[in-house]
Length: 442
Image: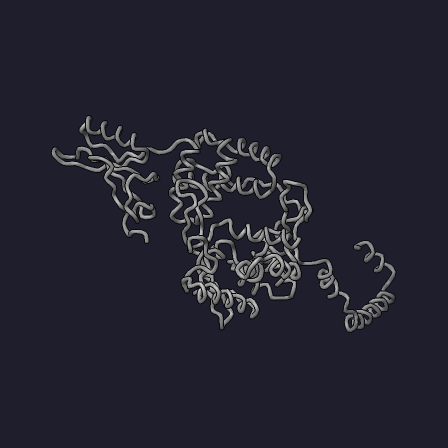
């Protein structure tokens, strides 16, 4: 639990570190942690014999240098904040500042895109040196070398949000990355959301691909209830309402992938910070009940514990669900390169773990479940998102339904026929000159 007030750490006599409320040091008061919180130095005050605190944002070396300068000077100075100048420095400052309000997944996505594709091109430059011309040249090179349009989009979004913060904080007058024109999507290539399983393939995966009841339940919850990776990992037995056949999605588990906390897992709110109830079939509810009896009743695991615990009894690792789904597909032949394969060649599964979530939405919509119901089941913030993501499910035969509206000729044709006859008769009675003027207007 985070502290209500930030912790002030004594680094050395006269130098302190004022940790923010969101900083981990404010919670455990562990000294010596590397973080982006500012320093405070104690220096002479406005009147003889008094002291004051001056804030310095930067390293401990900068804090010591500033304190020595002010101690030697002995005169009051305004609060000094050493501001980062290069894009690399500002990006690090931005990520630290926004870590308190953005989700871990959003921070990770921005940091990864920046580190891999933005920093090599612009990291050494000052923010004011990043121009629209440089950005468009960089994006042109990125489009030519990137493996997917999504990679380009994420990279552009990373530098766009960082420079937007620079505008908000008064570092630059305008955002040169605003409204950068992205390359059009290629509608002829298969999109990730289109790589889904059919209902028969999903049943085959759960029955023939899973090695035990635990794996079968995980595959079916992912493919039928449409839970995301973090929601699967964070699911606890107390979240399942067996009589009502509901899964209450309350949390998502995030595992740090980089930095000093790499591998550490923490519970976060779900995407969009909204809880939701997900309906499950009676057959899936019975499977989960059998798994509960096996795990909790027979083996004595905690009734409040995770449905799929890891080796330590807590949440399983982030890569475990992916491995379960990929190996299950290989066992039942749902791969692009079935066995026997050349030695050393890895299997290429038909879908990813997130593809099972798309499978759940695709099967439900194809069966005629209303869009707004599927949107609520999947936890989308707006049905428009569901409509956009699954627009490919509108098959060519369904387009005929639109044309069928204009095929109803029964009563319409009768009225139209009378109108046409009257029009012909009226035209025949008109003078020839009148008809000529009408033809000119056509």
